[in-house]
Image (tube, rainbow, N blue to C red; front, side, top):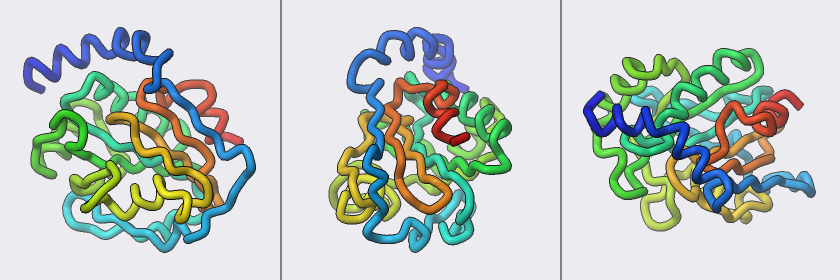
Length: 195
């Protein structure tokens, strides 16, 4: 961990407190229980190391998809995501999507990202190869599905920043968007996973 990353880790609680009341503390719910127009389980991604992960393998589990970065004020959420993963591992899969879309806060290679996550936060949940999560050319097919209502059935909201979270239920329906200032251990996140 470099000096900047150490300072960001120390300032994480303050970052969360300050930003929760703004747009980064946004929660969007699929109140109408609108099913997807295209199956979540038809998607796939590539993990660091090159192994392909077909989402058909995730059927019957809830899935929390998070865009991540190693040099962000929210990077401390890696520890909370790992804690959540350990607590809910029977019924939940968490997948991290490293992205350099917000002020170049993820400049490392895939190997550097994997090492950073494992050494500094003990991450054992799957991490994908670095990708683009914001809308536009080159956007990850997974984030295209998450942020386009013609795909997921209702949501057009793209990540507000690093550590935005999208929750998929056991039937492949997008149920929630949690902004980056919402902790993975927030009561509403945990209840949405357990329900």
